[in-house]
Image (tube, rainbow, N blue to C red):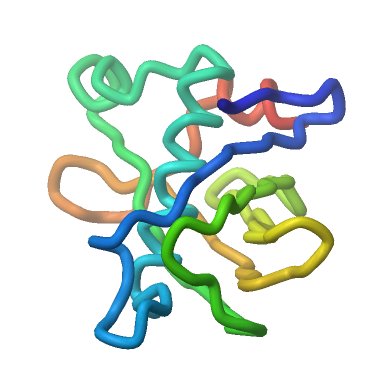
Length: 136
């Protein structure tokens, strides 16, 4: 279940499945990136942003430019996790957000993610004005 708080924060619940783990039953490190991607996609959808229309009509798409990640403790098979997403900064060309994966009161993983827009040629583009307004 996901929800969007009035301050723009977003919550996305995830259960750890067997396929998310390594041979030791611990979440494989790269899967945290998948978890936070799902949360960002859900957050964008709940804001009413149609990424297909953005690409087809506006010729731009979101792309991850940078991730600074901290692995703090291990999550394991069948854990219930929550991904919290919060905008830190919005400029004409980028969106910076913090994403925290927690299990109960414990922070398992945290990341600062920089998102940009690119055009059809893969070149940098400005964030669409309507999206910048939604995020302020």
